[in-house]
Length: 213
Image (cartoon, rainbow, N blue to C red; front, side):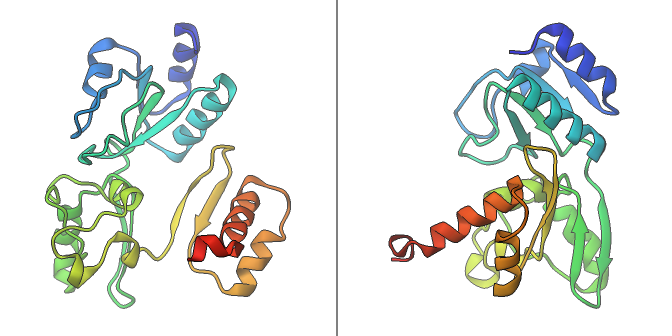
């Protein structure tokens, strides 16, 4: 477990905030579920550089990072004893709206209903609507593949996801999106990186007939 001095050094490198104070940790010890566990710290990153610094710290000190958006899920995914990384506090911008191609780029902290308010003048709508759509954030909806009561019409979040960009645990930047068979094979044949190993694992799982039954 990192020491208070370790956390202090990390905090000094971040644009955003990092707290080990008990009050804030208690606030992040639960979500909308009934589960509770006190995290070691709470981070509020303001930039990609902050996220990379947190990943490097987690690798060095062998402590888990728990990405969190609004915390509206009932399953306790954002509860744990590592560092809760609140991606919704500051990373909450709508980056681009492409009304011609019907696409929008958002940061993880954009609230679902606020996204639709921004899309409305363009005649666009993001369909999946959870019961917490007035506070649920897009990062959490992607991570949870959220849908809602109108899923028969609009499907779930994955049906609307074109690609997603982020960072793996080794700090490498990745973009995941649709691939042709040739592109997928090329990913599997690449250098021995964490991303390549992920693709190879997916290939092996898909190649197992038991997983296709």
